[in-house]
Length: 179
Ligand SMILES: [Zn+2]
Image (tube, rainbow, N blue to C red; front, side):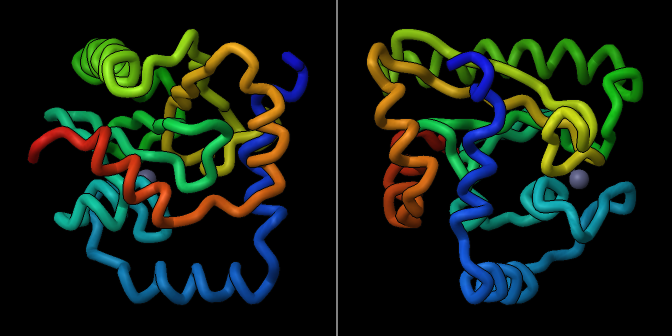
């Protein structure tokens, strides 16, 4: 079980066929917004940071230096991503303020998930670099994955099943903080 822990959400990419992938990139292209001067226009986190329309980016919360959103390719129900607003890919590029804020927000998100979804546990992790499975190595992001007793079978099935966008929107309604 542990050895597959940080790979399964990537299966959602694999499950997406070529036509779906093209449709998604066309949609992403259409929704593209101008990123901050220090951002990367091709980075979905920088796009989410710059876009005032939180729902279409599945952004559930924001603090002065961080952003939190639902993972479009969840490993489990309620799978969140937490990132600094700045496009930095290394831990040593974070300021002390950012580090402290990320830790504080991580705490807040765990509490929020506990209140709204009643998980029995969490996997929380950071993939640094392509070799470690980071889909987006240029912009640090923590994965927060709620876990329920006996959810292993569910995860096996969700990994090869398409996540329905409506399900993500419904979850967004539950988890989004008032802006
Ligand atoms: Zn970025």
